[in-house]
Image (cartoon, rainbow, N blue to C red; front, side):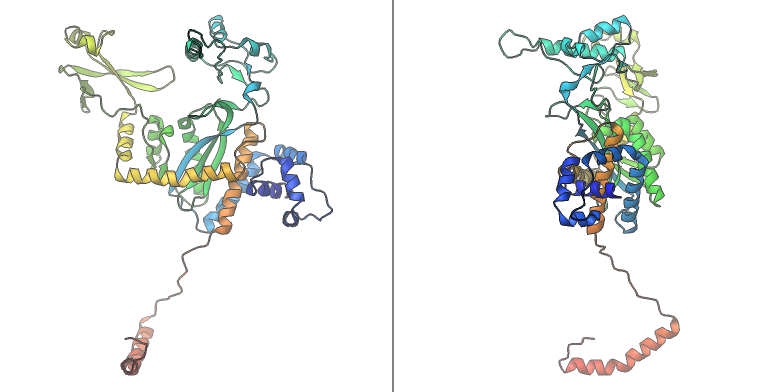
Length: 460
């Protein structure tokens, strides 16, 4: 009990360090009273908090979060029908300077690809008994090698000089031995750091956090959405609630995600990714025939499905080579290929519906609602509830820290919330009582009229 009280004080007072938390509580009489400690009674060592946090399982922290969330539901603070989802990287307790190379457990060809992106200084510090092996496929390693080559050829400042010492650090080839669960990630305009991925769902009624969890920071937001929706729905159903609308940014845009939400009866207000084009200029699409038509009037029928190297399901359309061979537009339309080919996502219909929702009037309202709901909550957790940095090691520890921060946030909202709706005590009278009431009113009505005529304050 003392452990959770201390953690609650730490997040409410925005103290992330266990050592600082103990020092802070020892100087506050109100906190000593809250912890049920006497003035001359020493508080636990800061290391006790760390060991206790590791000892307790994640299920215990989740049950505490569920309890506070249920209290918010009982108080009328949660509607559940509209949920806003967002994510952000949280700084891990590890430095980029501690990164070392993973072991090479791939064929010789892949070993040469690793040598093209590795740093000789880091190679000497690699730990052969760490158990961290390179598992990335060859096409991703080749992509890293090309990026490293372009980085080395970029001018470093002086005219004619090259940036030979520049090193491209990637999760596919490097890891942190201090915290192996931390991953390299970057936000636009900020430096690359070792982070954890914090995913959060917020109810739009009163801004109560309905779900929060920690993930590895090397994945895309869209990859986490299916499991995130399942967990949010499970918690809402446990409280007799049901999600109907889901608000998220374009980072969660994915054809399979749109399809999954439609199958569950959830309206996904998720803007489509910027690279998606609803139409191809000059190539109208015939839905009934499932084919495109080129500017010269030649058809491009559907030819089949395929998956790219990243596993995305695509639909292929291409014209007959004989039609393109005799076409005068081939040098500009298909200069290197035998014929013009169009590749579309297999979830094009789901993308079209999401694009229509995005540009509708309600879609713009939902975008503003998401921005005013979940983004301020993230800012509050980072600035005022100790989530600027994870002071523990491991994904499990980061998950516990995020859960406790959300518990403190919801509990503070619960204590400050005052219901605005009053319970009406009016009752319906039966017919006999209604007749008695009206007869009494008619009997006193002449007296009321006389009082009004003499300047009384009572009006009829």
